[in-house]
Length: 266
Length: 280
Image: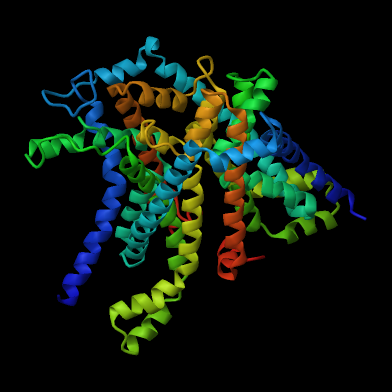
């Protein structure tokens, strides 16, 4: 085996592994265009009937999408506000309290969500908030905190502490320092935090599954029930829409604007 | 003592602090305390974890699938990450996009795609039967095989991003030194690359294992109720059979195992360094 041949073989293996990641997801696109009423590849022609089905109000897909959108926007705003306020406070003043809270805020990244789900089912049913907007919102805010916190902390770590010292020595009060010195300097971090918290809420399923029923069914909840009960091609249509949206955002970030904040694109 | 500025700073940490204490720490503590008081009490709740046949089977399946997933994921992710650091900048961008799409796409979309491909009237069986390779559809999903495929596919992007960050930090001059001293490619890989990527592999293995042990969605959808893992078993206990004693005891046990795994990982200095990154 020549050296060149071996390198080619290794390269082929790498791309084969990469294709294993992407190709299976892409299968939803042809399936969503099937002309049949059951899940299949299109055989006699292409059809957009399953996309039309998504828009029809009686199927409930657009309602679920609307609920998820509202929920994700609210959760993202609250998570970002809480994370930013905490990160700035902890940045100025370290100690046991901020360290403890930081661990608790980051915990949902590691602690299996099923455990949190078991706990929240009890808490929310005691408060009669199962299957309600405030109940789901509270959970999504908590689950959005880890990513939001990491984004804000990353942006704070680039901020020079001497600017704050300069402002203080010039007699600026706490509100001026927090609002007019620190906050404007971490705005990119805040938008990244809001974006990540939005995605977390938009995708959240494990805990949502246990604390919602018919009244407040989010889009992921609706998708989950559809997959578990009856697999129909409308799912492929919705999966295609989600796939296209994700790809568009990622491609835009990778090829047009994004660089420095991406850990893998150094 | 502290200045007015610092007191205000402390005040800023309060809203998030109260939120996570009331709506995260407390619910989880309640799970722990319920596991001691529900049903016939702590002893009965926890001893059933060791005596029940059903629990033993679920734990066995979970360990089996999780360890297999971790092993396969690490191999596939290492191949991708290792390939990526040797690519041209343009190919690397494409590769990164190919890792990022599955990373960001909803877990439900991925599970649905795999069901579409693997089920008995699915794309893969259809193609194989159309080509005449098989005459009966293969059972590829709603069993351990399907769960493992789906889980590996879910975990690989995570592991690639962790390993890629670790591999780019390796000093390439060491590799050049080994080469110039006459080491063959295989020796360079085994004696230089692999030992230097051990911390990254360790962190990736830990994350994949922890995520796998408590994974609900993919095992539940691709297992089809036949391949039962811990998270789905807990969910059945609270939604269907209303066995809170069993659900909370299993949840606590899962939490302890996850905690132990992380504590164990943090004991190793290389892992601590990989976790802490650069201290300020």
